[in-house]
Length: 216
Image (cartoon, rainbow, N blue to C red; front, side, top):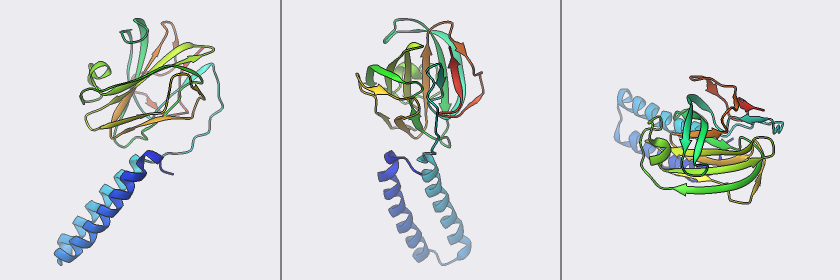
């Protein structure tokens, strides 16, 4: 199953793949040259397909759990000052997604969207310390009945050129449902109240809709 955000890119890639495949067959008659070219073209097309995959992951909604919004590696767990919305200290957990990870963003918790804003910006590598405040990003705050206000940021990386965010202020969202998509490399930051019980560790692999990030 593929995400709807990849439909146009997948179609264009398929057309380009077919044209290049037929063109290479016409230009190169030597199989020792033709076959490697065809394998490379096929590998590139498959890479695009896997990037936009959208595995179905059912979830039992639990307001006492904050689940991973994306697949990736936990790269940051630290106390920081959050200047945009809370303007106080928060506990930040960051998940870095490589190009081979699923890039669907899902709602980590249920609740009402209190804040949703897009910020244009740079395209520093996603693990750069300044990526959270200088890269292209969206900031979303969801008010959950147990945790209170939880923030997450979709952050573009060096390859990401478009962030898709479905959250709009006033919406009531459900844990596990699609919240958006980040195309080609990225990171998601989560911000919790100080003292939140974090259940992941640095270097741990997180799986969207499955890994529990925090509990009450």
